[in-house]
Length: 276
Image 1 (tube, helix red, strand yellow):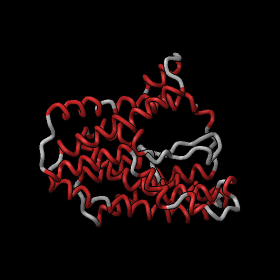
Image 2 (cartoon, rainbow, N blue to C red):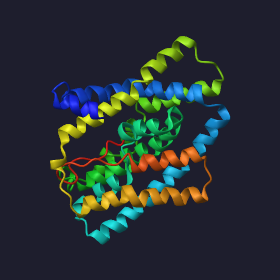
Image 3 (cartoon, rainbow, N blue to C red):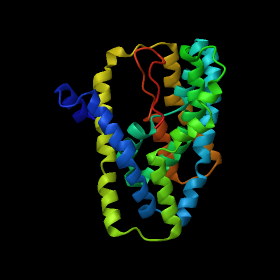
Image 4 (cartoon, one colour):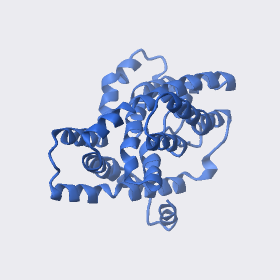
């Protein structure tokens, strides 16, 4: 991240570089990373155990969303910002921040668990989250066709992105029991290994061009920070005391919340978590 920041300062990287790296991560590196991780690191039995754990992030997001509604009332957040407030309170930047940090801490074994959180996070963001944000927007004020613009099908198009398709293809391959050819495995590993360094570069570039001076703290942002750093992690801890899941899954979900926090623009609501 520091290298990305420093090279932006030295004018090696610009905003277009971050866009290019983002496309490479989401459209190329991450799908291959998902494919090779699922097919090489998991058995069928481990996969079914993994999928069962998706109930934890789903429940945590539902509870966090309702907690955000209560907190918005207590903080008297502007009614025109409450949809954005609740979405930022509930959703994380799972890929560009959550994935590289989890991999740095836990290694490649964290990838499938990050993806499980990512599935729930992305589905929530591109369906209910985007719909609630659209209600805040003056662009859609007074329109009756918001549900049509941000319906289930529009959300599914966002959810079924290249990374998700890489995961699905990996699952299908795993269930067939066919071994991945060595050439394809080596190619997928090489391309997939770009995910973490490129993601770290993106974070550094974004921090440089965003700048800390653009951040204006107000009660809404403080509320979102409370949700991301205190309330949501506590919800995960409480849920996993009731629903037993592997220890590594609990740790990854926890770090996906604490580290993969929403990013903020100069004015609250001008920037939202990418939902990726």
